[in-house]
Length: 139
Image (tube, rainbow, N blue to C red; front, side, top):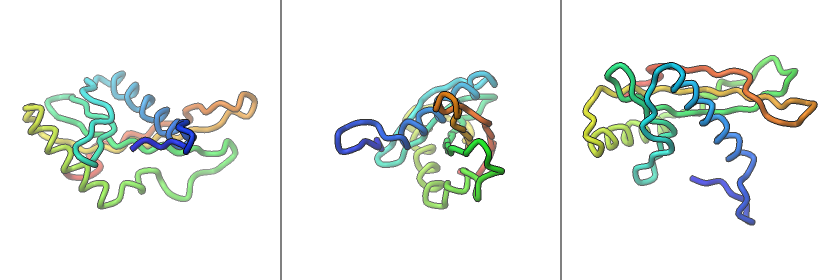
């Protein structure tokens, strides 16, 4: 699902999500995961990152939020946005990927929360912290 304005430009929400997904992919790579796919879709169900590690297929949903520099925290965690419907869709896509790819390994469903902040001097977004929730839910 591309989020574009009526003029075809990428929106701030899309740019924020892309930044978070790139940070999550780097995090996984540097922790020994082999990235197999990014933004893989099966019908209308999309998986942000599919990776492989220690004999498991790992399906990651990335949720990115921007936090003001002086904020104490968010009212809710980004992972809270992965509701029952999204979890069901991710599970369906994960099973489809396993069947279509022929990689018959156990499935693991992770959520990666990426917190961004905006640098007041430059106005650029930068990564504040990343939280990798392994086995966030059952496939």
